[in-house]
Image (cartoon, rainbow, N blue to C red):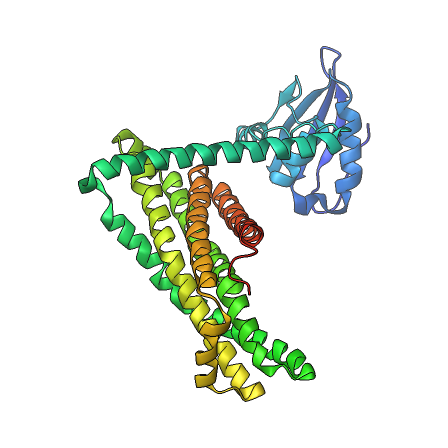
Length: 378
């Protein structure tokens, strides 16, 4: 075979016959990316043709320089494995040793023709698994509550108060801001329609019923699910990553008693208070907008509000707050305890926790709306 000479002292291939009559391919020159240059593609094809002969003896002792690009060029020509007959310099051994340690790419997954059946089926099984784990966790919390009722000295007051502060007091700012803006928007939109029929005074009915009964509890629950729920899931997830949960298990401290129960109790107590706060601020925003848009005085608004909004609506809103708060805490802790010891699982678990919590909040609101449809409506 004639020599393939290139510029800049490029690689040279020479095929000879050894003393034993076996074919031998001698490679000399510089096997680097800079030396190969434009010859990379044709040289790759030529090496592939030479590598088709399994009895070929490769002699690379004449290669003065070799970098990763040159090693990969030869490695691919050999089919990602060393040929049976190979001679090379000791300083080049580490390049091929490193290539040998690269794991083989996974085999392509065959196309699943039954995916219209398997995908919904897997979703159903996953949903059933989550429901089962939630029921087990709820049962464990019930047993812990019964145990603490008989041993009040072991009630984790410090953890409950800390969670009350984090989930309740620290959420007042964002809930007040969003509630005030929602009240203004709702009042402005409703007043435009009521002015067309001369029914300005009914803005009090619309704001009172919609905020106290629906928007206040749902808005507060969604904000708490996104803020406090994600924090609970991330906290338990980080404890899983740092193996703190395993340490608690080794010390004999149950997760449900020291981690889950304080969060559920704290959010169950804090949520109705946050709902009351959010509804009050939203009514203030609606009252301000009604005074600006319709000229309804603050004193008149406040005096008429108890007459048009029965007290049962307030109790329904507070009841939603208790149920939604405990559901958010339970779901957040459930997903937090399922997180594995890696950051990808932490992010995925936190996202699933928030989405599931918000979905459950809407489902709870729909159930309350259907069950108590005749309560508090005149």
